[in-house]
Amino acid sequence: MGLKAKSRDRKKSGLFVIEGQRELELAIKAGYEIEQLLVCPDISNGIPSQEFQHPFPMVQLSREVYEKMAHRGSTEGVMAIASLKDHDLGSIVLRENPLVLVAEAPEKPGNIGALLRTADAANLDAVLIANPKSDLYNPNVIRSSVGCVFTTQIGMGGTEETIRFLKSKNIRIFCAALTASQKYTHSNFTGPSAIVVGTEATGLSSEWLDNSDQNIIIPMLGEIDSMNVSVSAAILIFEAKRQRGF
Image: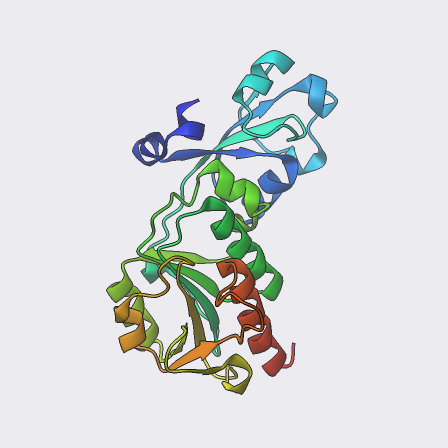
């Protein structure tokens, strides 16, 4: 299935594949337009659960066909074709005192999915992906996010555009960086804040560091100087939530 394998096909058609009942439930709740359900009665016990009793066109598949189409080994016998959403920064709606995560140029679908899971767990206002390198609707992003790609506002744009967006909203920029940084627990995240993380290989670009209100660091006690980006982001985000009295 081209929609599953190729980003080009997803962009050209405006469609993508959702696998699994939980992921589909979250997509429906988030208002994604479902074009077609693909159900394997042998796996799904013949009848989709009540969450799927919607007027969506449904096609029944044999186990053999379903298993060839499925990206994952266990998806409860339910897949769907859905329409892509627009993730322009202008579509982002923020609360009065927002807490936002920014990831610059993330490439690994597993890291993107883990960042989105953390964002959902912390009930962030938005995740902004600056200078995106991966397709948000890659099946591996959806799988690793366990459907949280559907539960959090996601905005995508260039680095300069994302910085302008944050400044226009009077959001302070806290960059995770190794230089000119203060310990993250010494920073004040109680006002409108954006926590910005870069790639593990290269960190943040100079554009972010030049526009940072405060560089922050998680002290390393061992031999290495960094952690997985999703782990670092989780530590920083939940310190911000702690300060906000969650």
